[in-house]
Length: 419
Image 1 (cartoon, rainbow, N blue to C red):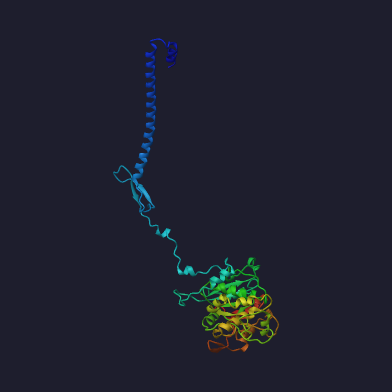
Image 2 (image 1 turned 90 degrees about the vertical axis):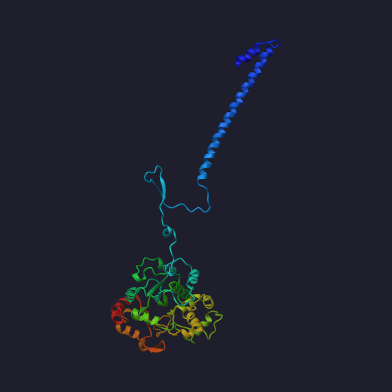
């Protein structure tokens, strides 16, 4: 091409031979341009053809597995096996029953009714709400073994635990234990005996003579109500002892047609005189009652206790020493459940000497004779299911830790444990 332009420069434009040569040059350029355009067109066509080929292949692959909204899920276990005399592998589907492993575990009635551990994370409102639930149908659709809930309201450990161990021995499945102790003790390193291990409930501080005592009682009842097998409820302290063996206590409570909350009218300053310590709207002085803190209730009364939103808040307004533990439940029972109540407690307490605290039976006072006198209520008679009886007390207090050795010494022959 360089030579071409050199030759063009060398020729004279006025020469006669210039025009034919110029015409040949133009034709040559057109041919060159045509070949160039043809080359570009061919290259473009090749690229497009290549893309179309890939697209066609993808479409072909998609067409082999058409989408169907009703297609079943792929089998869980697919393996390739080479059949005899076959040139290509055949897909075989191995049916696997996954229903047992994939379906959620069945929650039966027994699992639904299973109570939580004694130490849970429910607050008071959640606990009382759950405890207040009760079936409207009284018959149980399953076999239920009724239990007695033994509720210990303590400052620290159950110091007479070895004696209670003997009492409970051999009767698993017929009792439940709940311990409300000081929150500081809940984190102590005290070694608990087997029947009390893991039976402490979430607790709060309790002050003698103040409304925190009935809050603690209510908290114990609410926790015990979470176990639908608990049909009787006994409030005890760390200073309480059993006066009879388990079989006698269980039979006495389960066969009773009444509850045992001490209720009486005390006109003195420590009875009606306490009515003036706070404002009790809805409760008159004539309805005001007194009684022992240590009660024995059935499930119906326990449910009413934890569900009471009328009278319990009235007592809770008192911020001083109102001794609500001696007045709230006796007054509540007198007003609403008097016909069903025996108006006596099953826990012996000696108040003969007077003062704010009962008699304490020290180690030297604990004898076989004392235990015998406590068992028959020092000659007292009472009514049980409409009949007179001398078995009026199943428990007694107040016994310090120092009395434990003598209690263990005389318990076998006097209380007849292991029967």
